[in-house]
Amino acid sequence: MDNSNPYCIKMRFPSDLDYIPPVRKFVAETLQVNHFSPKFAYRSEVIVDEICHNAIIHGSRTMDAMVEIDCKIFPDRFEFEAHDQGGTRDDLDKLKNAMNKTETPSIEPLLEKRERAGLGLEIVRLLSEDVKLEIGENNMTTVRVVRKREDV
Amino acid sequence: MQGLKIQRSPVEYKPDVLMWKLEGAMDSDCIDLINTEFNSILEMKQNFLVAEMSNVSFVSSAAIGQLMGHRQTLVEKGGDLVIAGLSFDIKTKLTLMGATKIFKFYNELRSAVNAYNWEIEKKAENVWLSFPPELQFVPSVRQLVSRVARQKGYTQRDAFRIETIVDEVCNNAVEHGSEKAARNIDLTISIDRDKIQLEVVNASDPEKIEALEALSKSVVKTPAPKLGDKRGRGLALIKMLSNGLDINCSTEGTSVHVTKLREE
Image (cartoon, rainbow over all chains, first blue to last red; front, side, top):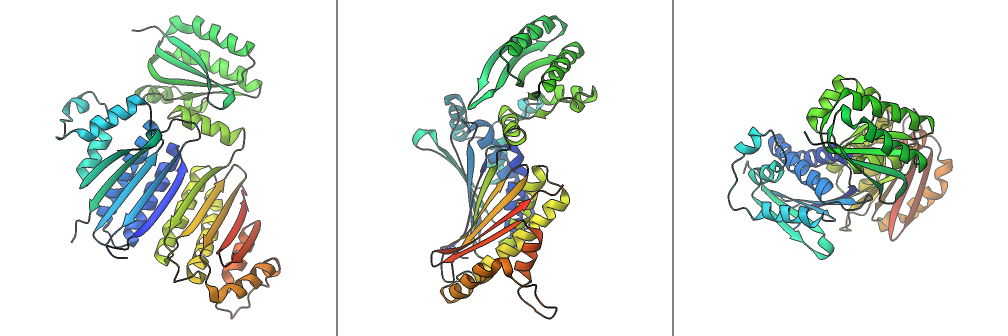
């Protein structure tokens, strides 16, 4: 493995919340065996959890929907992509708005109302270096996250 | 407090399952409405009902008692009434009331439908994974499969045996696959209530194809390894732990297919 030839891992699983714990643990363990620190692996696990959760709740239109993830492991960074069917127009608008925010919004109002909805992407942004959204044909949605190694 | 509204609709691709979209407060005033709606469902001969309650703001003990009675009616007809999408607060209250002993709760509609596919239709769920042919990936791969099995209700013992099978098959794929091919190992998991099927496909090493072809033909009769043998225990172990093993080898690739029935 080097910067021009990263390890590539792909997975496709049913769009069901039951699958998130095994999938996020798999990603974290894979990072650890590739010499990323336990802290890095755990924070990446949080990212995977949030992105997959969004893909299942907001990005799956049909009952037999699947979610696909791509992980690329470089010596100095981890790149993660999640592909889903894309949700309703409302879901996509909300996602676009969240991605287009230039500043991190105050989370105080959400915390006061004890609302957790809307925090997921903010957590991902906080823990990563780059988050990008692509909406392709037929609303197919890809969220791409880059996280750089902290201990180099 | 907003009164209760009930919207009835079929679930996509599932003509046998009906959804109730409940909205508002389920206080004691709504009992008549619930009963009327339920009676019309009985007339439609629909026995599986998902109560989607993400927009419910309050549930009285009278209303939940009524739902329990209706669930019992459906269970007697071979169906069920399950609840999906409850808010955390209401779910906590219902748990304290002991409703979790009666109802199955799901986080959302899709999870409830997947559970129906799993329990009633015995439909398999598929997971596909592609990983680099390196030994360091095998532990996390085998634990992934084990966790999926546990998540789907397999016992710890079953899950551990499945983990052992995955470990052996994947180690073989890494050790005996082609080192030169830049191809990942593909693992397909197909799991249902009664069995798990695993298929591992890797690039064949041209120098080992003949030996692997001979092995695939004789796999049913593979003799048990002798005590002093350092190699050859993996396949014997897979055969012992599984209910079906099939190996296909060609220049295109080597595929190992294992079937393991659920024991407990």
